[in-house]
Amino acid sequence: MWYVCSSLSSNTAKQIMNIFKYPVTLTFVQFLMVSCWCALMERVFKSSGIKRPTKAIIQTIVPLSSFMIVGHVFSSISISRIPVSLVHTIKALAPLFTVLFYRFIFNVHYSSQVYTALIPLTMGVILACSFTFSNNLIGLGCAFCSCLVFVMQNIFNKKLLFKESKMGEHNPNKLDKMNMMFYSGFIAFVLMIPMWLYYDGYLFLIYRESVQLDVSKTRLLVYFLLNGTTHFAQSWFAFTTLGMSSPVTYSIASLVKRIFVIVMSIIWFGQQVSFSQTLGIALTFIGLWMYQKAKREIDQGETKANENSLQCCTNRLVL
Image (cartoon, rainbow, N blue to C red; front, top):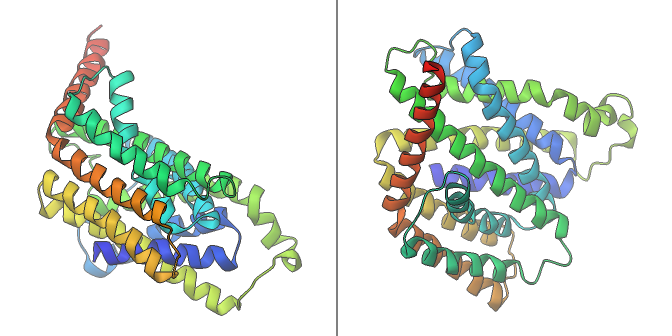
């Protein structure tokens, strides 16, 4: 279900962008739909419920939501300009950016096995982009920026979760997956209001006649509803899968998901793929597999960096 919802989310987003050229609005609606679905699911299943907002919760979630806004806007712009398969192939460079961040910013050293795995990964993405670079510079640039922002978000999340785990299970501000999704989506939606008004909102509120639609409003509304629902569902299934499996199993499942989404997007849109692009995608898969084999060492390096960061924070508090 995680794979299916991820594929549907990406492909329906592309479907919307083909007929509705407003990527900021797409991202804006996605955040609103995620928060609405979280509130609805909590009410229907009557689980722990949405917690009352506190200063600590808001301070924790605002940086996360800021990463999400920038990353998703870049992702929506890239999807509006280049094929979904290419967007996800570029996002497969996340391991490269992750290793570079930990190596040069946190001074974590890796063995040659890790760097060797990054060679076919990087070459594969270069080959996949080779025949579209000149015509889709903005789309490619936004896809790379989105990948970079999401890597920074993941590093932030790992440091945050590591810090929270050290604070113990009885932390009153600790959020479960539904509260985390609700607050990150809702706060991102609120923070995006000025951006949406500046880029798209004034067109819909003031100059409605200038908005060009290549499809009926009802059909467009159905697309948005399906995209927002599957966008929520993929996050839900990702959290659920992570909770039901080990980190290693989850990372392997995430690798296969990337392959699944790329292949399904090619089939969905009947995309013509050249031999060089096919070779590039295949090299990307091989690089991801090699990276996965070296993942234990990478995880150890990330844990060490998190421990050093936490120790520095503790020392500052003591001083």
